[in-house]
Length: 112
Image (cartoon, rainbow, N blue to C red):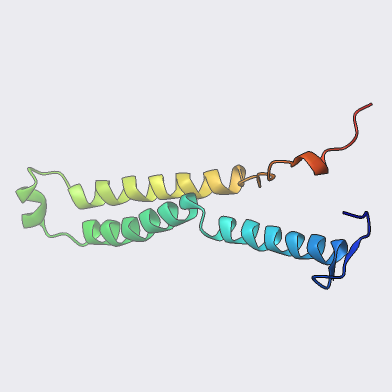
C-alpha cells in the first residue's frame, strides 16, 4: 500500500477520516455528559424530595400520629433532597473526564 493521503478507490482522504472521527468523539462526549447517572439520579431525588417534603409540611396531625408522632414524610423528603443535592454537587465539582480511545500501533508517536 502506498503512503498517499488520498484513497482513490474509496474517494476520501486521511483528513476527511480524521475530521469525521473528531466529530464523532465530540458527539460521544456530549452524550456521555447528558446521560451521566449522577445528573439523572440527583434530579430524580430532588424532584421526589420536593414532593415528599411538601407532603410532610401539609400532613395532618392524624397522619403524624399514625407514624407514632414522627413526621416521616418531612424527614424522608429532607433526606431525599440532601441526597439529590449531593449527587448534583458531585457532578458539578467532579465533572466526568472523557476517556481517550486506546492507541493503535500506527498512531503511537515515535520513541526516542
